[in-house]
Image (cartoon, rainbow, N blue to C red; front, side, top):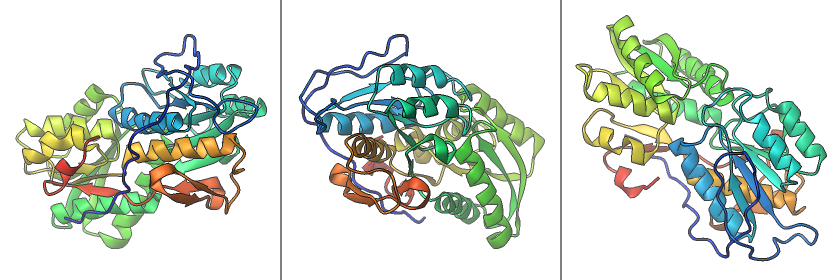
Length: 345
């Protein structure tokens, strides 16, 4: 199986930081003051708002963000809803803006539902960086893209095609039906299948809403509805883990291939027991790290977010803002028995 390279994860942090008070906003990571962030007028404080708390993917990305913000001498906070839904993040955006956060870093549950709140935050001087799942462009200053949508779609389709002999019925187990990134990847998967894998038929797309039990049940239903199914793609960390959990104890283990986007720690046992041959992901810790450095560069006036702007993201190196105010982290990584123990996130 093909294994793509990854960027090294930022190591260590210097200094501690003062907690940004986020009253009524759920979980927050805090520290103690370590001095000026690089701005003469205001200490750096960055609020990360994931799609939902308790999600292993966002635990990893926000860990990278925390390390980066504290390395810059700033304050890091993580707040957000327990369940992902279109408007669940609005109250956390509003509170961060009221607390005059330097920047909000958000993975949007919906491209439009948080738009008004983000617009108001921006009008008050808070910079807005989206990562993982974008909003409409007018609502943010930068989008930190984990990998190109085309690269993500192609890696998953090609990987599954190789596992099932490039023919047969497959299905997609996605997150929420209105998730921006999921829908973009699915459309590109359909194009990739049509153009390069004509003998593979996509027979169904179902939605687990990034909920473990719902995704587990949807996997069971897929196998019952489509008895000739040869493979499942789940481009969501919650979905692929739930699908693997179901397959690992079912009669379909070893018969129905599963791939998608997952983290090594949650998928390791399913790779080791043969339920999953290979799956994909960028390094979410690196993604959070890059988003934090971008947010700091915006807040400190080092960049404005226009195409061609350049900034340094610690050990990750130098990045350039591309078209549509987008910064690209890099290519996804393929995880399999040969390399999965090299990663810990």
